[in-house]
Every structure is written in C-alpha cells, then in structure tokens.
Image 1 (cartoon, rainbow, N blue to C red):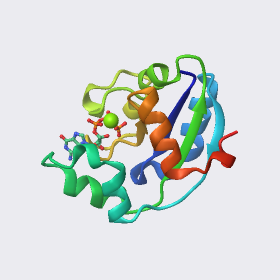
Image 2: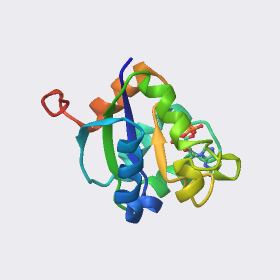
Image 3: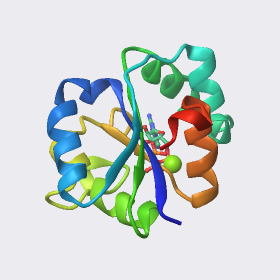
Image 4: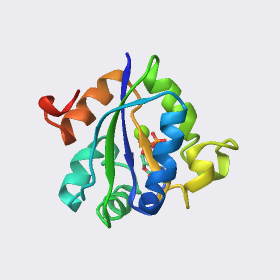
Length: 135
Ligand code: GTP
Ligand code: MG
C-alpha cells in the first residue's frame, strides 16, 4: 500500500515542526493533517486492541493529556518505511537518527505513532478524517 497514518503524541507537540520536516525529507507526502485532542474515551477506542494490556489505562490518560497532530501520509511502501523512520517503540532501543531516538521521552511518551498494517492505516485514517479530507 502507499499510505500510512501517523500521530504526533502530546509529549512531542512542541517538536511538531522538526518532526514534519523529517517526515517530508524522508519522501512522504502529506495527505491530511490537523491539530486536535482526544478525550480519554476516544483514546480508548483508538487503542482498543491494547485493552487487555496492563498499560492501557495509563496510555489512554497520556494520549488524552494534551494536543495531538494526526496525519495521513503517502509514499511507496508507506507502512514499513514509516515504522523504520520512527524507530523502536522504546526509545532506549531506537536506532540513531530515528524520530523516537531524537524526540521520545519514554516507552509510553514515545513522540509518534505509526500504523502497523495497510488495513489499520485505513481504519486509523478514518478515525480522524472524513473521506473528503483524504486527498
Ligand atoms: P504505536 O505506533 O503508537 O502503535 O506504537 P508501537 O506499534 O511501536 O507500539 P504498540 O502498538 O505495541 O503500543 C502502542 C503504544 O502503547 C506505544 O506507542 C506506547 O505509547 C504504549 N506502550 C507500549 N508498550 C508499553 C509499555 O510497556 N508500557 C507503557 N507504559 N506504554 C507502552
Ligand atoms: Mg502499534
């Protein structure tokens, strides 16, 4: 697939400009972008796949604690190439030069999200953007 979904998380909102610059320089085109904030309930819906994990409550509180920037991106091999650009979930394990290595604060406050499949990229894009906004 040629699209993925990302979201700058509350801990990295002050680094939005630098992060978008890195994304564009890596060859991704911005399809849709906005600034918004999740309620705890909507954060819970977005991360419903993790509902049984011990960190789910903390994650939903964190993800609704401040503004976020959801973005739809376009590039060949978008999902895999974007996950390479952001680096490992835990910034302690992220490679040098990745977005999480540069900007993440912890395994939870890890700066940015990246969809893990084409199917989830489409689901997550629709969670934030109408079809008429996805050009
Ligand atoms: P996303 O792109 O945000 O989905 O990250 P990921 O695919 O690299 O990780 P995963 O989907 O497994 O986890 C989703 C999010 O939950 C992570 O990005 C973290 O914010 C948080 N998270 C994951 N593992 C832990 C953990 O062990 N402890 C805590 N507190 N948070 C975690
Ligand atoms: Mg994930």
